[in-house]
Each structure stands twice: as structure tokens, then as C-alpha cells.
Length: 355
Ligand code: TXA
Ligand code: MG
Image (cartoon, rainbow, N blue to C red; front, side, top):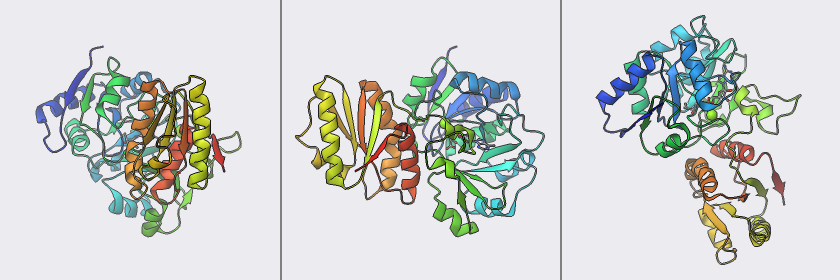
């Protein structure tokens, strides 16, 4: 299949191209588009055949449900059975934005979109291109992250092109996304709302609006038979780079010392090796690494959003370099740090060592 690739700026939307994309969506085709979190791979959420195409293009297991994206609150009503009070408050506070809510689904939403579940995930993205496309299409758009299944979510148009060129009808390249981590998922169907995936909207932010909020215990550690995440997608080894990735946690000097020891050992054996650190810690590695090692700072510890923003991009960069081993520092788990460490820990296949 020939994929139409168009470039577009959020501040200068090409209406003609949006119309073309919307027509593809209405006709049952697939269009990748930027959102403020990561790129999405969109299809008409109410068309079971179109939803099925998403799974094929991603190579994604079909029990993993999709998020329906809307562009005004009126679009929510037909998708859900009820809108609980807590959901209304959260929508008021955080929509449009990087928060997905799980509702009981209406009969209109096909099981192909919800992976066979009786609930539906809905998000109102805060991105001009995404909003323009959904409005023009006139239907809610089912969109998982626009990566091949198992790869890090795309945060740049070129990531989508790498994964999806030739597999879908159209890619809208809107440059770098604003946040770089997927939305916070909150299940509002239970008495006490529960976070199923941490993101930019933190537990503290949710609590300030609705009081008590739980967090799915299964997302904090390695999934086992007895402890299955409630969001089916969270059980997969996601976001994974090709390299064997280990995270070290503890005193920053000890961590750097151990990372240098491990990385230099592998590099001397001829393996391409990567180190993941923060800008403030670069000096701990300077002049101490073998030539086979590339040291990358994800961002600035004082501004953890910069770390979130570059995380998936750096994992993909290591893949391109052909890195075989990666050693990384653990970051703070406060606030947005919870989402950062959730993604990093999964990327490392739960290989995390306390020093
Ligand atoms: O930021 C985002 O949420 C991005 C952009 C494109 O909006 N989308 C995204 O979609 O991350 P995806 O498909 O990669 O992740 C959706 C997650 C999966 O873990 C899935 O299992 C979960 O949401 N999910 C979807 N519907 C659900 C439901 N009804 N109940 C529980 N979990 C659900
Ligand atoms: Mg995904």
C-alpha cells in the first residue's frame, strides 16, 4: 500500500489535507496523527472492520482495547452508558488533555474496538491537528499509539514513518509531540476511581479534584498470573528497545560507578553499549567510557517533563545505533516520575537493581 505522508504544523493547519484524512477515516481507512502525548493510529471507532485493520497494521493482539478519541463533550454521550459524577469532575478539570477515562460502553461501540470488553476508553486530546481531524471526520476515532506492537510509542513523525510506511493510508507528520508519554488512564466505573496507567495527570492531581484515587497494584511490579493489570495493554513487554536494558537505583555516585563498570566490561568485549543518564550527571561519565559506549542524557532532573519528552525517542535511537546493552539510572518516582519509571521499568523488562 502507498502511504500518503503530509507535514503539518499545529499552528498552521492545512484544511484541505485534514479533509482528505477525514474522508479516509470515514471510508474505513487508517490515518496516523499527532496528539499532545504520542502519535495515534486512527480509524473510525464505530466501524468494526476499520478497528480490526488497526490491529493488523500494528501487529497487535486483538484482546488489547483501543482508546476512542473525541473532539467535543457531545461526542462522549453516544459512546457510554453513563457518565459517573467523578468522571464529570475529571473531564471539567483535565479535558481536553492527557487523560483517558474508562466508561461502561453503549451498544454503539463495537467489541472490535474494545477488545471484547463491556467498557470503553475515551480521550479528548488537546492537540489542534487531532481535534481538527476528529471534528472533520464527524466520528470518534479509535487510536492506539502509532508504533508497531512492542516498540516504543512514536513521539516524532519519522518514528511513525519508520513503523507504518506502507501499512496504512496516511500519516500526518506534525513534528515532535509535546509530552512524549501516553495519557493517564483512569477507570471511573468502580466506586473508587483507579489509575490503570500513570501519565502526566498524576495521582495527586486527580485526588485534588475527586478525593480518593487508587492505583492498580499490578502496574507497579512485574505482572504475574495472580497480579494482572486491569488495562490489558499493560501486561505486554512494551516500549522495549532491542538491547538488554538494566536500570540501577541508589546513590548517584555508586550508580554511575556500577554503570561504568558494567558498560566498559561489555564494550571491551566488543558490544555496542549505551548509558542513559540525566544532564546533571553527564560529568560523572565524562572521559571514563570506552569508545563503544554512547552516553545519552534524557533530560534535566530539575525539569522531569524533559526526561519524559525524550524517553521513547532515546530508546529508538539506541535501536538505530544497534545498541546491544543499555545501562540506565533510575529517576525519582514523584509525580510525573511515576509515569517515567513505569515506562522505563517496562522497557528494561523489570531488570532493576538496587545498590
Ligand atoms: O496518550 C494516549 O493514550 C495515546 C494517544 C494516541 O492518545 N494512545 C495510547 O493508546 O496510548 P494505546 O492503545 O497504545 O494504549 C491504550 C491502553 C492499553 O493499555 C489498553 O489496554 C488500555 O488503554 N485500554 C483501552 N481500553 C480499555 C478498557 N476498556 N479497559 C481497560 N483498559 C483499556
Ligand atoms: Mg501503545
